[in-house]
Length: 213
Length: 302
Image (cartoon, rainbow over all chains, first blue to last red; front, side, top):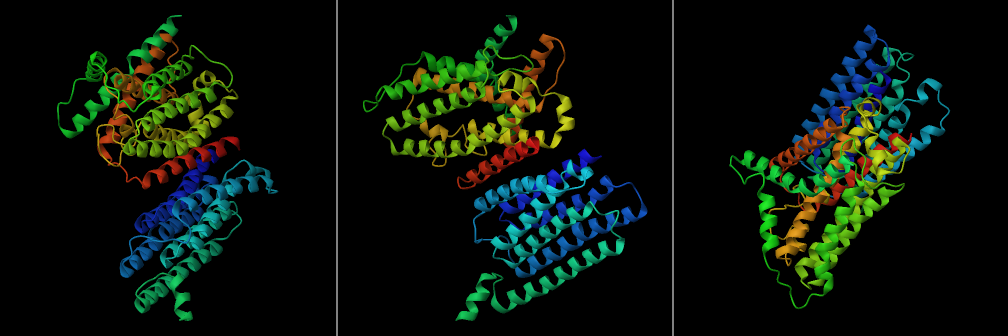
């Protein structure tokens, strides 16, 4: 089963690249939703079946795959943006940076003192690569919504790392993490709406300029 | 011996048929009857019977262009294993020769285009060179991953090493390789998302613009060379994508020919359902292909 989980992790990393390279907001949101669903399937593949596990799987797919993308879509519709026009760093350079970070993640994961049963799997490099991709999206994009997507990807990276511990992690911790995320998205949605209502643009780099004038 | 004869007759005779099949597929999608399958052969015969006109401003470079291109492609075709049969010529490190034979042919095509002194052709040459330097890393990453898997630097061993078993053990990286190689195949052969082989005199085209001044037999060589390039890169692609083995020698040839025909149909379908990309989007897609194959290499090296 481990090798099928590895194929899914490769898919997760490919979705990172899709998000790094595309300017269309709708595509990014759909990609992050697909990534959430894939991540939801993963725990079922690495751990033996239990009702606790089924609950986690359903919860993750519901939250990451349906509720959060729906909320972001709603914010996009209200703020009326379709694409990220001018990121701080262009799309091709971010793609290449993403590729470099992914490579470094693999190199770094080799060096980590992991448990022998985790060493052969792709979980650790995939988690670091996803984390770094989320970080890249978060730092290079100007629009608040792209930054929310970057934050989601970052959280997905942390989640992959946590997958190795699902057995040890009680359901309350899982639920707490998801709830935190949901609240975060709510807050950001409200903030985005406020920014777009007050300043007629959700370009965060202009917030700084406003203060200086 | 028989395998060598079949290899040579296939690389000499089959390439134009692929173009015919692509054309027929596109016609079927458009609801037309389309030109017969053998139309590219008729075109080649017609072109070879014509006379040539050479501009007075051109030098021997312009005349050498098509000949060198065809010759380099022909040599490259002898290095590639077709299906499960290893190539007539193979030695350690022939993958480098293979990659740079295409480099040589590209150099002569662009040099011939620049030799005409036309600004339009110079523009096409600049584009061709720009895009090809993005395609080359993709091809090399793919070849390196194959070399690593088969632990050999010979094209014949590398490409006949693939088997259905590999698809099960290293499925993800094989899928990435196939995706990257398909993009390379379309880009190198100037097929639709990158360039439209049917249009002449349009500002966004790349390859076609460079051969506008060639006529008669020289143009025939160019068309034949382009078809053979499609055939050779297609053979590499099919070796990885469809590593079916029948066990008998003739059966393997049959599988290979059917595979190539399927590939031609696939290219025809892609060309029918996709529009050509805007010129500024092309590098983005090519870099994506490079990242795919680099990623595949990373997974295999691990």
